Length: 144
Length: 179
Image (cartoon, rainbow over all chains, first blue to last red; front, side):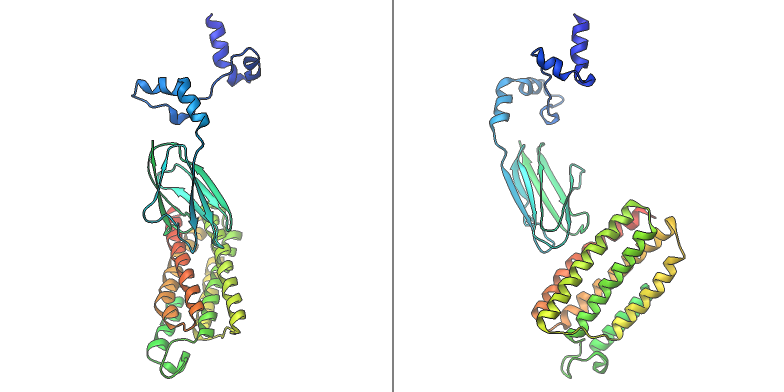
């Protein structure tokens, strides 16, 4: 039995996913934001079918931040969103900018005239700035 | 370069406030004229583009190169806006003592940087970028913007200043990485 268990556990790493899928044993990828250390109920919720289904059917909202004349439109109030939602930065400037989390969560270039998206997975308040013009700052507040 | 730029800014300040003869627009308003302001702003941008192009040839440091690439892109974009505006307004940028002084200072600094390589170049280039943006931003804020009479030119300088102040912070951060 332990040999089978070990084989199943190692299968994804060894590239045997298709064999497992054929056997009806598809390995599940658990998104890291679902796991909460120190809360005994959390793993149950993460693994629970109801939770999984609701995650699959809930469409994430897209919140837009416009960049114009070297400023983020959400400043100073910040964007308030739910975990799993998306923030989309639309750069109307003729300059390239970045959205860079001060805490290191994300760092994305938004070329002149283009858009970029980041999915906010964890709750918290995140200050961000433009690496190229650090006097441009913004804030995203994510609730569970 | 810092010394040369300071001298250029001093020329600008003096001409703006006490010697209307040098860069005068009229007897009642002693600041540089719009064609002169356009020339000064364009020259200052062009100097920074050339310095950045030199850095892209000389430096292998990824932070320094990222900074330099950003300078080339941004200053080219601002200078294009400035030229387009001049064209639309029928204004011909006019050379002047401040532009000449800026160009002279930049040539001296380029010669100085050309003698360096590796980490010594990176450090000297970044230190100069901090000083250069600090000085030019000061001049844009206290002399060029208040002296400009055309509303669109003023707006362009104000927008440029926000970007250039960002460059100063970016330069300070990058300089701290190559100390």
